[in-house]
Length: 364
Image (cartoon, rainbow, N blue to C red):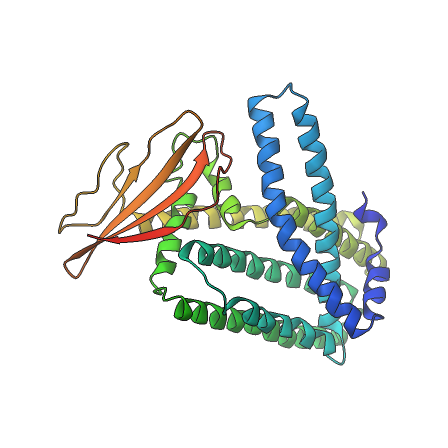
């Protein structure tokens, strides 16, 4: 309801009327707080989930609910402003703001490549980049929808699509190039082999399939979201707000009745739901095929190198408070057995007792 009180048009023109220096500071503030709130939101959601499942009658559930609601409100406002700023950049005639947004990607290279990183911290950067690309595609799709609805005739709509497509390509390609350069120099300066990204893919594949999450009070479908740090609820709130704005313009500037628009939205929702289910099945099968050559599970076992197919052994011992889930992938590399252990300290309640402790390489 609070987002409904914010006018998209007024916010758009307020951002467009600011000086470049103010916009630079605004963009920096939005990006920093977005990352901080993503991290805080995961803890807030975990706390609410733990209180709901473990002590539903305790006063802690009320406190956790209030904290989550305040977090969702604040994070939604920052995302709302972020989309409005990106909308101004996409529709700006002089492309000065767009240049400012693109330069921020390359400024990130300067702030990251000259620091010391381990495989654990590199994994955090990788997951953060995954979220950034997903949110960039989502934001651009919302802006495209809003601009299409606001186009009055076919000629202006075609011109808008052409300009928007060119600008979208520039933004997306600059994001990809900046990430490639950043990861290339991070791995070079920290002597990290590129094969570590395949190990990261195995970790996420284990989250998708639920491997290594046995006995934990955490649904494996949420494990990927928790791993990459994606804030789902604020994104959903902002997306609903912008779709409502697009519907308002479609009713004002088109001859389509409200009933027809409702049917179109219902059909679009069903199509998106089918795509989501199909994509989920496809990702699960792909993750399963990725893990198939490596997976053999046992509750308490030691790694015994062989010259046959590689295996992944689950090693874990429950304790009173938490259980360490360790996936050890053993691969035969040129006659030398290479063991990759991935440890994730997760308590039995599904809450993190520590951060991801990384990929450790051992050569036997």
